[in-house]
Length: 341
Ligand code: TYM
Image (cartoon, rainbow, N blue to C red):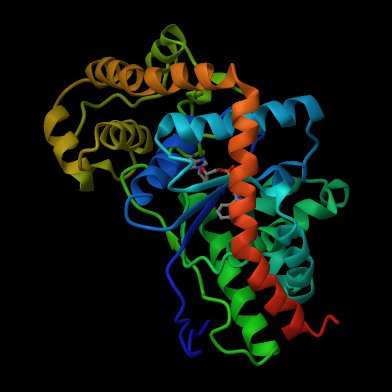
């Protein structure tokens, strides 16, 4: 699609979110949360716990509340500073729901039907999926555009949704003849672990919804669990290669080396150099140590923060108030553009 609109000239802003559904995985951490932390030094950042997205599939209310606080605690434990970045949960800021409705009327059914995540999550029984699951990407576009956010750090799996947000922004701007009103947000997908794969199958994404717990590292796993999961991780029969081109057709090797590089903050080439010719057992041993060293302080800090729910709730309330201060003038203009009296 063409981007030939007068460009948006407003300030740069970063927005992203994580669903409070089930445990956070190493994929969430390396593909998203670690990147969020890196961006907070150089940008205005808004990071959301997307509880409204979570209920597109059934969530037990007690679990949802706990997971919302846990994701907030994980944000902070990983290094997000609630004074510098805005941290809040989606349902506290009504602009998300309001703009999502307007975007439901801008987005086309055909666009939504092409979304691979909807196809995967709805499975064989599309007619039994919630209407919310189908409309999910319009809510995601509303999340981003209620802040006129320009940059969206995500893992590879969310790229299609961010691109749909661009299409929605562009159609809104065209339909209402307000060129450049909404920015066309850019997905920011960077680093060695933009798509962390299952430990049991290098062709499948590491996911909190995989039925096998052995397929993923959870941020709450203890040392023994991390060691056992890497020990049993799928491999292939060859020693580790020296060059990236030799990772072609070796998804398990690529995945474990990519995880190592992302955790160590090293380039993939450096890690390839380090393990060239080694057996998987050596990589697995070092990966276990590195993962434990990096995740333990985060896990311990999450536990500490979760002991004071009142404080987490105060942080979310403060973040929501600051979030509303950004969305209110934008929504006032949107209502006027749409013709709401
Ligand atoms: P969610 O909650 O599924 O995942 C949160 C973030 O983690 C990334 N991620 C991964 N990255 C690398 N490898 C993996 N195996 C892996 N698994 C998950 C995801 O790409 C994501 O960045 N729809 C979004 C949440 C959302 C959002 C938004 C994001 C709602 N509104 C607005 C950005 C902007 C989601 O379900 O993410």
